Image (cartoon, rainbow, N blue to C red; front, top):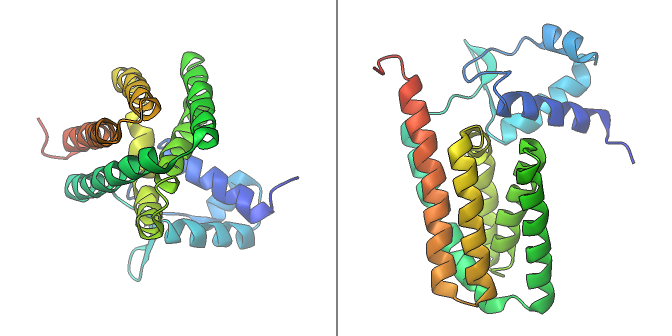
Amino acid sequence: MRKPLHAAVTARLRAMIMDGRLKPGERINENALAHSMDVSRTPLREALKTLQGEGLILTELHRGTYVSEITVEETAELFEALAGIERICGELAVRRLGAVELRKLQALHDEMYAFHAEKDRERYFELNDRIHRAIVKLSGNTRLITFHAKLIVGATRARFAALHHAARWDESVDEHKGIMTAIEDRDAGEAGRLIHQHVHQTGALVCTMLDKRAPDAP
């Protein structure tokens, strides 16, 4: 089944922001963008509204519509919050998931490892995102799930950027293997600790990358 046009346009624009084709702070020229994507401005505007809700696009009176910028401070706070929430959710998930849920989680990890072996970043990232959300959902805590859903959207671009750091990508895979082992062993405390460390490491790398891009960086 084909996606509605505005959904397809949204996915394409989101990907352009994630991979840097549309850079932070870059102004959105609706006419030029609609022409390059071979669509009318109506689905494009619907897509921009969706991405604005995700925090990827901003609109200001005297600046127009542009790709939101990422600061070191905001990123540090965001990943600090994510690390804490995912740690708690991970601990709860280990205590509450059943055999069927465990097998599904194992299957997702196996698929993700295969994409890493194939060096398919986009499909790897999609599976990685599903795994993080699945673990949070398995916590069974509605409020934590809701808070996490809001935060993870803001972190998506930063997390994708971290995958372009080859050493971090490999390191991240190893961390997931450790997390999965702890989950299989039903060690809630260790699973939570490893999840917290994993999310924190990603945030720290992104902050370092952003700091190096700052105008006054050496």
